[in-house]
Length: 489
Image 1 (cartoon, rainbow, N blue to C red):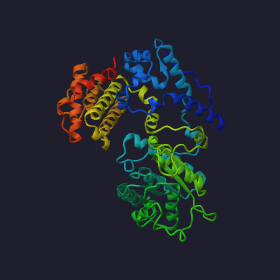
Image 2: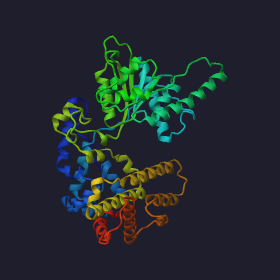
Image 3: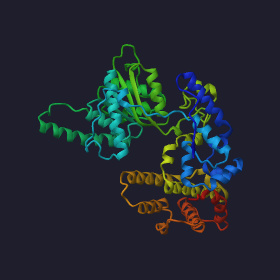
Image 4: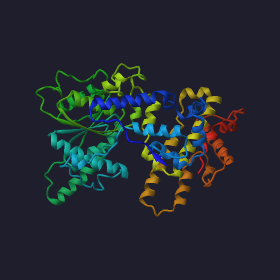
């Protein structure tokens, strides 16, 4: 077994970083047909014919746990030398992902555990994220002397409420969904009652509580985010958040009389903000960064981005508005473009695949194979349906999330019986496809897999409101997909 070599590139300066990115771009270009393909394209377009036959022969018979290690740059000694060199080259080009020590960067940061009132409704992951990020935002806000925290893409207000009640900061929660704003307000009211009761018991009932203000609008650009902040400066208290949200959600900023508003970026404006975002999706993180650059009143930005696959890209968008990728002038000059499928692929975590385990890996591969082969059925027998872009894949995504939660719980409670956990995962993999699939055995032979695939297809057609056509040959489709769906242990 071997691993990739250390990189010869460096991020020590902007020019060195750009050189590294140019090398990545050069390496990726010959494989663009693969990284821009969806799983179903592998079957429909027979993409395996473009892959070295020795690689296919080798990897088809390789144990699943070895396949899961490839994204981490780990290869086996018996693999073809060309495949080993490919993996080495890949790992040498990976940009560094070193976790920073928060205490060394923010020595004054004080993280406190959140009580059960503040964490109500949060899962373990969300609780950890909010606990750490709220402490980071509080430390940065204090260091830059900011008056207000603007939580962009606030969702149900978990971060905003912790910053308000735990750290007593002035917070504005912005989200595009009015329902989220209503939930945030209702949840904040319950938390406020709890803290008010505690203050009465302790004799400090005269102290006022900070409650997050909510604004409902869709932040489409840095100008729109600045307009929201302008409105906050003009309105000392946001009395009607939905009305304010509607006024700034229009492209022309209808309803905003800018002559009456103090500009956020005015030289004489003394107000200061920190922009914060937990899972600021796609272009939202980009908008926050642009607002930070354009407005001196925004003293800091703390953004945990997500859904990078949803970034807008110049080559893919017809709009003349600013796109989310690339932001860098250097990257633009390199001519680097990715596309939706490539960005989806780039969001995959090598570490997640590495620790997934054989059983979970098998489930994942089987589910993808079934979904891709079902798409082939639609492509051949129901081409008119593809125009509507059926979202059958949503079920698979939900099941994978269930599986990931079980894996996390299993790692926290290793005393649980592994076989029972496997049975539970196997059941959930095909949950909802057919009622008689809840007793799938540990080992499934090829005939059983075909039977499951046929049921999967019929269930999928039913969800689309379609009936199986007399000439649909599920077996023929499965026989084409099966050689690339079977993984040997």
